[in-house]
Amino acid sequence: MLRDNHDPHARVFVVWEPVLITDWHAPGAGAVGRIPDARVAQFWDPRHALSHAIWRGRVVWDYVAIYPAGVRWGDAYPAAQFSGAPVVQVVDGFRRELSASGL
Amino acid sequence: MSFKDSTLASSVTAVVSALAALSCCLPLGPFLLAATSAGVAGFFLTLQPYLIAFSVLMLIVGFVQAFRARQCGRRRRTLNVAVLLCSTGLVAAMLFGYAPASAPAGQPAVAAFQLDSFRQAFNAAADRTRVVVLLSPT
Image (cartoon, rainbow over all chains, first blue to last red; front, side, top):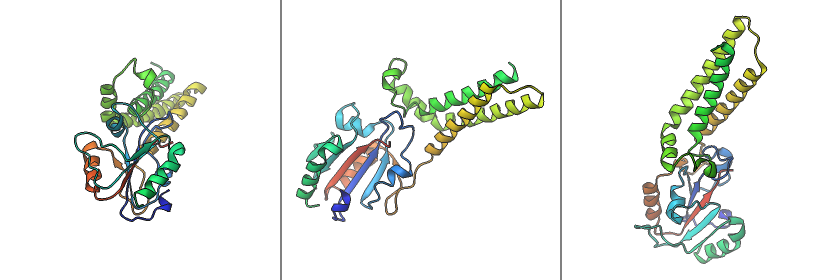
């Protein structure tokens, strides 16, 4: 998806978190290497802190969200312009919204 | 405790402490919820480096005990050797996983997630479109 979008100003936050029984440890080179785009910053969140912030104590994963310019994170986690999970089921909508955002 | 028993005990201890080090990451929710809490998981997360070091120490003790048992002319029990080797493999796998992966070229290093610093990074890019993705490593 990122290969199809060339806006150098876009910012992508990829947050890895343990969900499956095989998620013993932080993502290895194989996982982080799947997203080689320079616009990306990757994180390891073993305590699901972001998940809990997004969905009040529940674990959300295989999830993608778009936040347009101007949206700020204040006291509460901001509402997304588009969000959905699992990614494979929302990828078409995600692409449409990303294009609509000018990316 | 005999050499055989102490070798086995060292191996098992290494595995138990290694598993304790991982308990913050293992999604064993239904099983762990009955016995522990998020606070305990956080406690183990804090102790993770020490528990991993303890695992390595126990493995060393296990190998020393096995070596000494051989020097004393005792026959090795297959179970002891199997547990010791499995423990070594498990701890090695965890040590490999504990090392942070390098980020692809052009990206900052993979960072341990901190909510406040993530919020700052998110807001610092408020002049542009942002995408947030949550994924499982495997």
